[in-house]
Length: 149
Image (tube, rainbow, N blue to C red):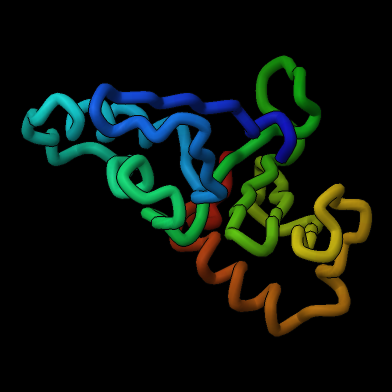
């Protein structure tokens, strides 16, 4: 999760609010749609990202409910990884499923409540089955479970 945190500074003329910051979720794939919006150009249909223009106009705004990442384990491998971690970050939590790369089977889950545990020291997945079930469904919509034989 910490590897995915990238400082982002966008200061368009006539729109920048000096010193403004936001806690809105964003992904790097949101940069291109944002630049296209700022330039007043039409957005290609194939874009997966969302424009951050609403957040630039109002730092309290949100444009997405979750941000997604994936990370192999081990981090450095030859051929194929042993497992892939698929994560979903919301304003409140991070949920990760570690899936066996060959079978797609879930081998571990992580759930961290950033309101109570911003350092991600206490995995609460085992104690919150209902929350895990809900988040697992949302994560599966973004990263469907599949095998890589």
